[in-house]
Amino acid sequence: MNTINATLTNFADAFAKPLDTQQHDAIAQLVNDSLNTRFQFGHEFYTMKDVIPTSLVDAVAPYVDSGLELNNQLVELEARYNESKFSFEFEISHTLSGLTGLLIDQTSISKIQINAVYENDTLVIDHANQQINHDVSIEPSDLHGLYCIIDLDNGQSFLSQMSADEAKQAMWANTNDRLNGVNPYTTNSKKLMFYKASCLRRGLKTISAFNNCGDLALVATLLNLHDRQFNKAKAMRKVMPINSYKFRGCSKQPSTIDLMFKAEQGSVVIPFNSNSIQTEKTTKTGAPQTKLLTEFYDEGMQAWNSDTLGVGF
Image (cartoon, rainbow, N blue to C red; front, side, top):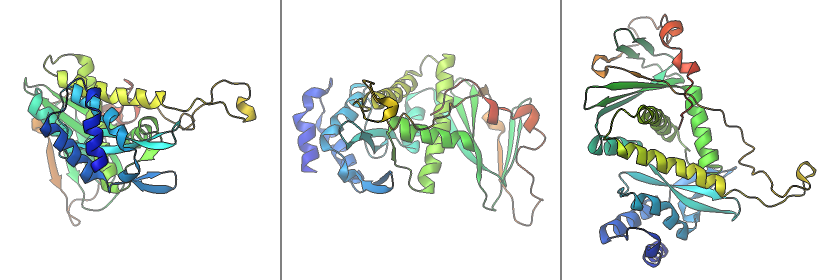
């Protein structure tokens, strides 16, 4: 902890906007609360104590310079592997609750709903009448997908959808392309929170691309910070020559992270009225189970498997 305090104090010049006492204490507390957080790299597990303390400045500076608040209610610390230094460095992500709270408090977004859909659930989406009927089964089953409804103050609503495969691909991309092989999603609850945040970001990216809400500048800031983290991770990758015959004579070697598979994500966001959503619990002795996406699959639910805008997590 003393190393963290010294780092924030000695590297104050790294920030375009110097840290005030409140910011300093909030960041120090964030680090202190995160030191025992576990993450996986390869087949081994580590904690945030294994991360280089001085790398905190590079992680924090873009958020401070953008005027965003950093505390343990809004963000969480993650680790990223720097291949050229053979060490872990700090990275920052907004928590799902922190991200939704920030958007509702500081943008024209009035309400955000994110629901997971499981294989035993019954989900019917009527696009013509803009209605969702989602019966949640109490029987455990595998994740089938997610949907997110974003309501704006001007009355507009947007629905974004993500299949389970796309959610897992998004987590793979984040783990390998942003965190360079570090996996912080070590429990099912952490994975589900990531899936929901990914579905939310999909909707935010498309709303931002539509450019129909002039007061959503914060959305662009959050998305730009996230894209910057991807670009920085790519720039950090190792470029030393290797002796493998496949790359003999080459001046640069491909990173081991670059060799990992990453499927492209798609996205579909359509106008939707969230006031019509109906969510109910079914009982074990209730109506017989209906397969997910029944008669509406061919006509109205193609977005789950065939969206094309290419904006994932």
